Image 1 (cartoon, each protein chain N blue to C red):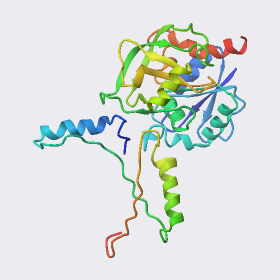
Image 2 (cartoon, each protein chain N blue to C red):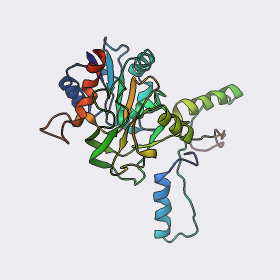
Image 3 (cartoon, each protein chain N blue to C red):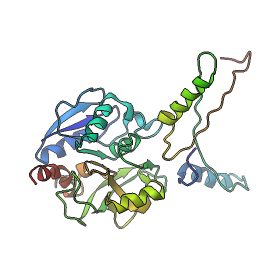
Amino acid sequence: MKIGVVTFPGSLDEVDAQRAVTLGGHTAVPLWHGDHDLRGVDAVVLPGGFSYGDYLRCGAISRFSPVMAEVVDAAGRGMPVLGICNGFQILCESHLLPGALIRNDHRKFVCRDQRLRIENASTAWTSSYDEGAEITIVLKNGEGGFVADVDTLDRLEGEGRVVARYLDVNPNGSLRDIAGISNERGNVVGLMPHPEHAVEDLTGAGTDGLGFFTSLVEQAFA
Amino acid sequence: MPKPEILDPQGKAVLGALPRLGFQGVTDVRQGKRFELEIAGEITEAVLAEVEQMAETLLSNPVIENFTVRVEQPVAGADR
C-alpha cells in the first residue's frame, strides 16, 4: 500500500515514520502541508513534532493547512489515518477524534520507554496485535495529557475506542490512562507514544511498534 | 480560559510560586489567553458575530476552553 506521511512546518518525526512505513512493507509517500491532493495514497500518517511551533495550541494551526482538508475528507470516506503525538493533537483539533491533549500534569517534558496495553486490536492500525498485548515503545511529550468530559470518556470506553492504555505509570496525567483512541469506524487512530521509534533492534525500545505499520496489510488481506 | 473542570498545570505552577515569594492568601490560579484584535471600521453586531466565530473556530478549543468577547474602544490620543 501507499502510505502518505505529512510534513508540517516543525514536524520532527516524518523521516522515522517513513522508515517505519517502509519496514512495515509499504511504500512511503512524502506529503507536504500545502498539498491540495493526497497523491493517490491508501492511508496517511500524521507524524510527531512541533508543527507551527505549537503556537496557539498544539495542532491548532496545522488543522487548517490545505492537506488537512484532504485528510479530513478522506478519513470521512474511511481512509486509515494514524496521528502520532503531534499528529494525535492535530486529529483532536480537527475534530476527527474527540477530546484534547493538554500540558502534562507534572509540567515536565517526559521521554521514556513506556509500556502499553493494546486495548482494541480491531482498528485499521492495530490488527497486527493480539487484544490485550503488552508492548513497550517510546513516549516523549510535553502536552500529552488526554482529557475529555466524562460522557465522552464513558462513550469511548463503552464503544471499545480506547486503543491503548498506559501501564505501570501514567506518564502525563491522561484521564483513565488513555494513550490512544479511535473514531467510531476505527480507521482514524490517535496515539501519544511513538511506535515509529520502536521498529528496529538497532535503536529504541525494541520492535514492538512495528505492528502499527503492518496492520494495514493484514486488514487488506483479511 | 481553561474550563473549570480541566486541569491547568501552568496555573498550578504560578499558585506554587506565589507563597515562595511571600504572597499569601491566594487559593487558586488559572491561566488563560487574551487576544487583542484590531478591527477595521464600525463594530457592528455582524462584526461581533464574526469575531465570536473566530474565537470558536481558531482562537479557542471549545473542548477545553471557554471564551468571552469584549469590545474596547481605542483611547483617543493614545499611541497606536
